[in-house]
Image (cartoon, rainbow, N blue to C red):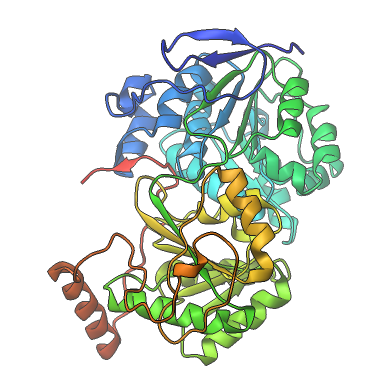
Length: 481
């Protein structure tokens, strides 16, 4: 493999040969001037895209899709929630469409594209994306992951699929059982590659990649590019185009971040007060609350339920069926507060998620970026609130160093005891301050917001089940108004 790469020059927009390091190599934002139709996608794909209500690509899509269609290897870096999944799914469908066949024989449906993801949740999201946008073609797509019985997956693989989304461990299980053959793979995607390395998948990746033809197109996507990721790219990618649409390790500009200094003993009460304050301001109570441990996740969920909140938990000790049911309940509104470990920090895509709360700061600063990336997705606005005990100051300092910015420290909701802290700005977080942090500072709930709140209250009174929100936004584009 060669050590050179093509970067997109930020001032000229011209591709240049460079070493495969990631710099802030962004082009002018062209996403507002082009549409998905401008990519030359087949009419069947365009029909599926339009059916989802999308016309305008996000920056990562606008800058990457033409290179993928042209056959280039690519390293894509963008903050979470910017549509990286569709950046590779759409061109994959276009490129292998020539192989589409309506014949039933599995021999006519070999695996042409392989997408590897670190978690079950992300694999499912990618698979939904692939299914949505290949629905009018004869291409077959499926997903395989651990934690569930292999029997159903085996049956699907034996019938043949062109697009396979998989977690590394389960894919190796199917390879060992002789039901997954990678000898005709043309396109390989490593999605959230940094997370796969963090989870120790490198040996599995090596085994899988050794079974794929050397003459292939390889795409690597990640929200962050560490030295290890760059080394991985040097091994597996050929003269990759590097597209980076945002500063490394940055949260989306649509995410408003705030820190509340609070002792660990008071954090549970603080969450309740924060959500009650949001309700008073006419904002949604729906939120994802991140914890560091499975035990802590389960305990906090039960405690919030005792406080009268509709809460649920998702963590590694839950079976896939339990996790799926909990996520469905959260998406439907039956659960307001989803308490989760970092199993939900990546791959969980819920449209218009209004708020993320860090009950505890993660031990890895990069995980903080991924956690808060669950809100403010696809151009919508969101709030990321961190509850920080003084003992977590070192973790906060590391997060601020990674993000190259100081996070705003705001007063706690009334009724929660503040903690002393030497961190810059903590002194201003006085419990006596009557002005609780209010995202976007609305002077008062708008008439429409008040009407919506009243309508929801009326629905509850008469027992109406709220309509399930669209689980779309997997494409990551901007919906039509």
